[in-house]
Length: 332
Image (tube, rainbow, N blue to C red; front, side, top):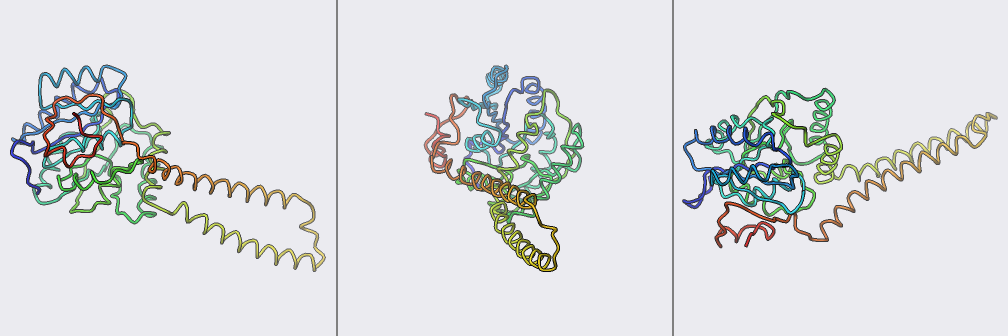
């Protein structure tokens, strides 16, 4: 394990918050019950990702009652993966635990993660063996996505594991060096390596409120994951091109043979038009794929910060801590 300053908490919990007003009181109650049972100092870092309900007020009330509750307020909504990034940037714990606010990831699993961490594992990820309260379509597409991602990437991203995980401070410091704009945090935590293991749990139904990951956002996250860790979509253009060239060669040979034998099967323009439209569609699809990668390069070149913090409550800004934090995480 990594040595930490005596005044630093042993555990930092990072929880992204976006319009979670109905969940926050129960989240705090369950987190306190679990973390106090460890007998170690801890902090709860809530990242308010541009909430428009009373989430900010509830968090501020909790901070005033319990200084262990610390708040990062973004200047606007930057997204779930960026909120996790900000929380880990600010975390001071020897171990950092990332979990969602909706209580689908039960805080009680944290104790099992801590036990694995004490055994010497530096990343402990939670694997969903059952997902309650979700439609068959979401279950099927999620299962398909994880298995596809594992097959097309060189990084060993665990199957059926989300962002719910514990990371040793050495892992967190390594991940702070990864500042790419389009982020898939569970992939990045696998990419950095270190000694990793999983714990299994049953994912509960959402405690209250609505899901923050509808189909549109799930598709966007899937696109980020694939383009961040695989070149296969670009390579498919080459494979498809060679395949079509081979089929075209066979078509030319077949057409010559049929014409020489007096067969008029290929007379007319319908076949030509269908072939041209098909090839045009394929070209536009692969131009779109190239555009996705090019857009990500453009975002990286602009060099904008990952997020902007409008206010932060409960953090002590000493020089030693700020020296290893990225510029956007430093609060004057």
